[in-house]
Amino acid sequence: MLRQLPQRYLLVCLSMLAVFICYIDRVNMSVAIIPMAEEFGWGPAKQGSVLSSFFVGYLLLQILGGFLADRYGGKIVLGLGVILWSLFTLLTPLAASLGLSILILNRILMGMGEAVTFPSVYALLARWVPISERSRAMGVINSGIPLGTVFALITTPIIVAAYGWEWAFYAFAIIGFIWAVIWFRVAASEPGKQQRITAQELAHIQSDGEPSKTQAAPQVLTLLKSPAILAIMVAHFCNNWSLFLLLSWLPTFINKGLGVEYASIGYFTMVPFIVSFLFFNIFGGIADRMINSGMAVIRVRKIMQCISLGGMAAGMMVVGYAESIWVAIAIMTVSNALGSAAVGGFVVNHMDIAPKYAGTLMGITNTIATVPGIIGVYTAGLILELTGSWALIFQLAGAICLFGMLFYLRFASADKQFD
Image 1: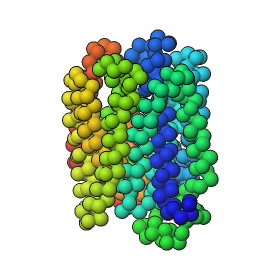
Image 2: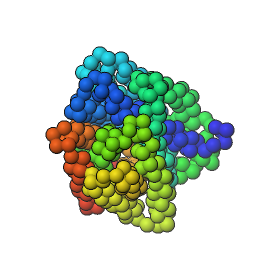
Image 3: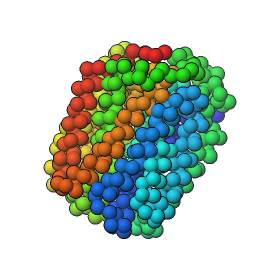
């Protein structure tokens, strides 16, 4: 069966599963922290510290992970990353029992493992997937984000109720170890190194100009002088402000802000993320069809990014005023659906500009885009503790999305650079 399946499809599916595991291990804390906070006596500020500490580690290895993936191959870097973050997921209950400082350190180390995920995936896709298929491929891979989120939101309360919050970490860690065994057996960093690939598929991939093995990437400061790269970076930062806010605080908003009982959190919050899964794939297909019809790549990227950040901004501005759980979920569902258009915007724009250095470039932009996970997630907890206003938290996110949309429309480009 694996020999009959196009090998680039297999690589994309396994990469999507890696992202799925990345997010179940990340999001389970946002649900488990509710009973943990009750057990350990943590207020919103301390909860914000625990939730944001993950992103400190996530920030630290982005650029190095991208450089290593571009230089030595995404297979080994991604595989080792999954093993590392699964190990620290497994150790989370032990760390929590040893104190808040040890738990924060453990979360930082876990974040360092997850940091290599997207830089490695970008390095792999730049070599495995032709440009005419990249938006759809990234749509499939990014589907792991909402699928992993929904899985964690639904199963974590069930596991907590049946076995205690500790098993939400033990169970998910095992999934990562199983994936790693499969990955190292069947994946390859480049299509030419895949023994099961057919001559026809290899020719199809290479007809689009498969990037050669890279030498050292341009200096970071050289990359940052490009307005097009700055546009990706700003869009990525603004997109992630809302994403990380929802991933970290949505269960608490549903539970404490709207009064939904803990056991039902997952069922209410799953709807926006399931819609994201559907629309990642819908917008990915639309973007590729627009390019294949002859529309300029940069025009497609800007249209998609305008839909994405504009839609998210509108949703964030009003959701904080929702007094009904159903109104709040409806607003978030529409916002997430429109936000999924980013898969045809900045998400693949890295590979337009610098396919040889896609992993490194993703590492650079994702480093900056991790900052909202630290300051944004912590700031939300601080605002909540000082003012109790969910509306203020969401409106700040909406304003940041609006700024990102305008900046990207002004400075984005799809012209190949640095190759």
